[in-house]
Image 1: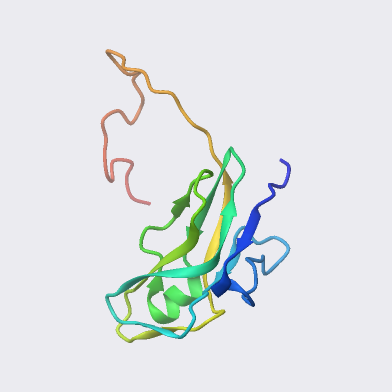
Image 2: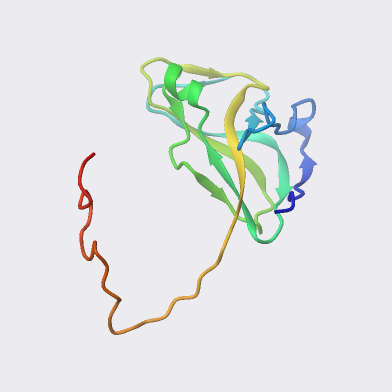
Length: 150
């Protein structure tokens, strides 16, 4: 698969903030940094859309998924509540990362801090057709937990 090219427009409050970057050669996600103009205190139970300071153009056939950084979730209880958040290829507004603090202490979002991961993923659009019956499977109508534990 060829490497998609993401076009980036920096916004004034994003000047001086590093672009998303992969931390290792085999990283699936690239880190996104906070483009807050001053530190923001995210209180316990609070949610806040953190500006990234740029807009992007995602090529057709791809999406951007926003995922939590595991270290923030483990150490502070700070995560992306709608993970993975999807950014569609036709969105052209500023990238913002919705963070939630599920921890018991306030968390300070500093300018330039790595706050989330961005994964570029291929997208397939389906068509839908109404039919009278569905084919049978081993699982059938089994819902939550129907495949057992282990």
